[in-house]
Length: 308
Image (cartoon, one colour):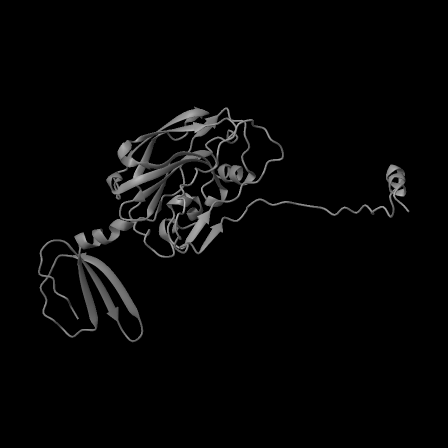
């Protein structure tokens, strides 16, 4: 059966041929034609190119394009200036409301990444396109091209989009970076490309997903206060170092807003919180030394004093 389009211009034909043995799907571009209806088993659906582009728009990636720091830059710890612009690909910056900016160290996958500093929390895009990251010397070790910026932006239509900057180096650092993070950076062989954009725009209203409905484990990197839905995602718990090497500390995450309850509060809407699994491993060995049967020496004398 053929559907006839009377409008002029370019069109996309989707041709589906069904038989008892097989099915053939053919999609091709044609100019509009005028055909008489037939009773063929062939079904032809005609979609305008404009409609097709509109359908694909929500799947376009990018929005925030970080212009500074540049790829491969070497910046000393302290104040790092960040600038960005509209990438020119939907959704536009004008369609975004607030953003959270974090400095991250590690590889391309969420399992090998550690957010170090929150440079801006729920900041307004309307306030400008610059921000400052204050990087403490003990936040991490100086890993070549191991650092990048993570933008988590909230869209006015719902959901979030996560953009990443190119990789750069923060020099003069004397902190500790986890083995998984170092391995993730080493596997890149000096590449400066940041992780892939995670576009969850228009997913914020989903009951089970919300802004945390990113794929590939990136849901664990979305700041807790920006997540919606029944399930929340928490980042991997850090591994304590073997010794303390810094005398100043910075919070891993920003403080959360709260409201003092003066009346009965509604039932919690969050069903559960999932925490990213640990990637580190430990080894242990058995202590084969036999336990002493009875105290000896001074301990034996001490215990003997209490015999009665």
